[in-house]
Length: 430
Image (cartoon, rainbow, N blue to C red):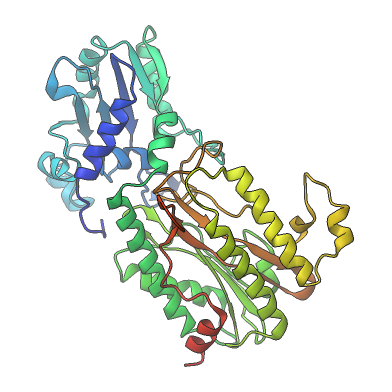
């Protein structure tokens, strides 16, 4: 891994918190992700399943974590099963975790090779009544590929049909949504790397550069700071491309007078950052661009203040809609008749701001969190309002990542990333 070793006390604490929510006489199993093929002998870069990483810190394929708090054999209350390493693997693939390195990474003392899984699991299953399986129940999930976890669950339920089955995901949704101080420091690192990338881009952009040139500047800075790259596919959208919300082609030339909507963030140690900024290709906003920019920034600032413990996500978005409606009226994009005659299920402001304002962020860019439950201290949310005007050839989105505090306004992990229009212009023209 490129990142520095994480304090394994984080993973010890995470397992303890998970185990405390399990039923008595129960066992939970978590699998690594597959390495996915492209074609021939090509594969996609490995991305660890965030749940096993959250609970163990293991960032390696073909790994399995077992948590069995009530196991009569104390050494089997936490077990890691790893792909056995050898000299051949070390030469061809690189060093894999040894049992000693796995303990240093995870804090788990009992480590077996994967070849021993079925024998040891049989013993464990005779000692428990319930098995926790790990399913993907994120509200935005759309999975068409059968995962390693799915295949293991089929095998487990078929092999041990008399056991009761429970779900890990509801427990993880709550645990992962509230961040530990170690996690917050890792997310701050990801945001700091993003800042370096953005400042590099501000000094690079000028008329006639290409969107992919800007993408490359970010990647250069990310890799140089121990990130493996973007936390998600970046959006570098100049001119009217900004009005395509998920524009990712990044293959157009940036023209003088246009704006560039940048939605890009670095990952660090599998933790995400998620930043949006909108900058002028020529280094100066026009009066109209500046008016819209400042309106979006005001909505962002006022929306951020609403993210406090007890806030309900759906209610929050209604209030943000009111802020945006007021700004759109001031910009002349809506009039009073538009608002008076609006469809309450799709308010008038949605013509220019059609997406949500905030989502949980953490190990996943759209992270775990139960949106029907009140917000809590140390949850981390994006704040990302936007105004999109195809008829005028530009769109503006501004986005920060903020931590809900016990008292007062949220703490902005992106507080050092330039966002005020004057500062952006000053940097671009310095």
